[in-house]
Image 1 (tube, rainbow, N blue to C red):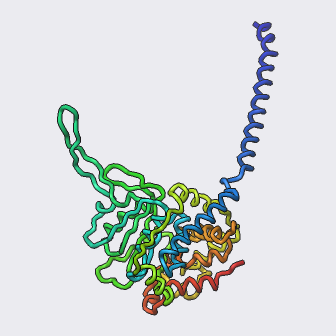
Image 2 (cartoon, rainbow, N blue to C red):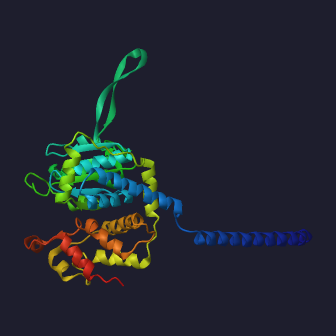
Image 3 (cartoon, helix red, strand yellow):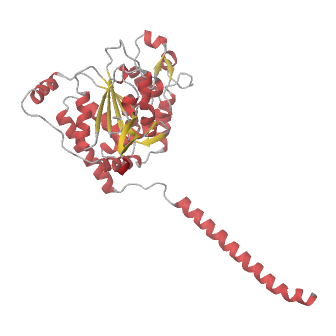
Length: 375
């Protein structure tokens, strides 16, 4: 027995050396793989051709919209910022300024499915998301049988116009929440995805407040931007007469498809943002909160709640798109200052003193920009 054990010792030693060598090689391969992962660039940056295509397509789309919707160049630019960032928009303006025309023209220029929902006090959630109905289905020789089938609502479109959204009850308004955030609709025991791309463009009238239901803060926060539609100037009104009361009917030409739009959104998301620009965006957001030490005096006096982290996301995402629209592949602090107004105006909640003194979000945002350190 002793001789047998002694004869096996060299073999065991040889196996242990091979095992140690294989473990050592395995550790080296694992370390090399981890190093490769760490050195590999995070995210695929778009090439020059993708950036050029983004700029050209966006410019063609903007020119197509401005040729039909007269006198709303700023509104169109801000709408494109939200569209190319993949977010939803709340349009606020008096009747007759072309809000519905703008949304329909956008859908025509992108060849996307368009649906318009007129919000009224008696509108029900099933009128938006759809409902389950009983239908007759042929069953071969045995005749027909009744089955439950889902009838999709108008929310199953690429661009959904929620016209006068504040006229519906909160129960109906909440039917948009899941679709806007999750891009899905839950009816019964099934959750159905919405088509891509999916955008909600809602309008509301600031004048008629009787019989309306103001949107709650949770739903306002889901709109990437709030765009104010101002009254046209005198020269724009003359152009409106020339383009709308004649015999010629203007219609938008197709500029891009839905798949191209999704590609443009991915290109915009890949735009890099420097660390000091991100820090400046954070300082802008924190300055909207009255409990922060660096908040301006007017914010502490007139603001009840400041912007949520979604406001920070809106600042960065729309600033990326703005940089590309202006032919740059880097975001500047000036870009953040430009997009701060549509991105934050609906996320700043005034207190009683602010409402009593007639303070507006525009005034507070301007104060925040002026008093926030850029260094």
